[in-house]
Amino acid sequence: MWHDSTDWPSGRLVLQDGTSWQGVCFGAPLSVAGEVVFNTGMTGYPETLTDPSYAGQILVLTYPLIGNYGVPGEPNSEGLPAHLESGQVQVAGLIVADYSPAYSHWQASQSLGEWLQAQQVPALCGIDTRALTRRLRENGTLPGRIEVDGEPVRRFDPDRENLVAQVSPTGVRRYGEGRHTVVLIDCGAKANIIRHLLRRGLRVVRVPWDYDLSARDYDGLVISNGPGNPKMCRPTILQIRSAFARHKPVLGICLGHQLMALAAGANTYKMKYGHRGQNQPVIEVGTGRGFMTSQNHGYAVDNRTLPEDWQPWFENLNDGTNEGLRHRRAPFFSVQFHPEASPGPVEAEELFDRFVQQVCP
Image (cartoon, rainbow, N blue to C red; front, side):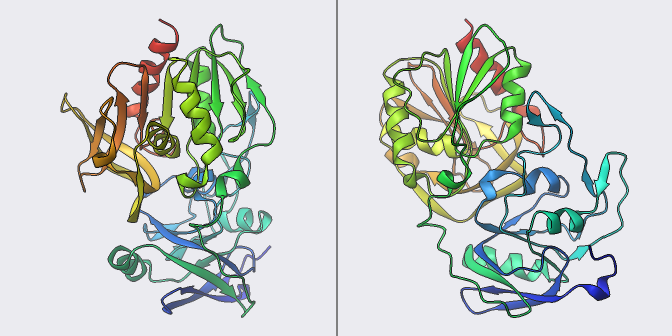
């Protein structure tokens, strides 16, 4: 492990448009390619970096100083990581302005750099993240690559990769002993979704993204968050469409929201630079209630394509994009944001209570 910054190898970030930023590598000394995106959160990097929705992406953190509270140790509770959102770092690479190898926190067991090196994830510091973020905002997210010591790397097209298939589990797992059963279609689920369902007394059956639900009985269905283009998940879309015919409660979160929209017959589109951070304001249509939310997505649902039976539920106050859907008669609803947060504000977690009220009437 490197402890002195003078030992860190040089590296650079190169965008598809040819612009590049020079820095030094404090993570694993590897070259990688990915979609370059930015996150505006000030804290919560351990949870963010382990969110499977970031698979295939090189993440730029806009907050200037990263690493000063290290990375927590990882005890498990009910088969889930206690502090992280999955069992490994999910980003392809990390870009920060200033990295602190010195850390202090009562739960920390290692530095961010040590963790990334152990996980074989490259990370660059010394980058002008303000200028980089401005370029991404003005031109949109771009494919790019981290190059360390000139090592070559293959090109990466995030719109042509089925990233969900790469992060979804291959088998079925069960959690809890509740009286009512919820099936979770895991397209890259954050652990905190499962924690919230267990906290409310539900039994959770976690299944792969392409699992056949036809022979399984359940009281409610949850479609999780996940990475990439929702239109790559046709098997999931077909399963959701069949699930609608059962008229059991269905909740979609983030990618799950987009998949429900596609299953209903609506359309999705890629955003210029998406929403990634813990400070996205949304308003509930009809009530005017506002929520500050945690978000991580690069696609959105097109309100103009919603069938008559569906209506917008939430709206983003920054750009007016769709943040939620609900069926006019059936117990189907979804949100583009993360009610489970982790990291971020927790005020929207009441949506899990609304779902449980439908599952356990």
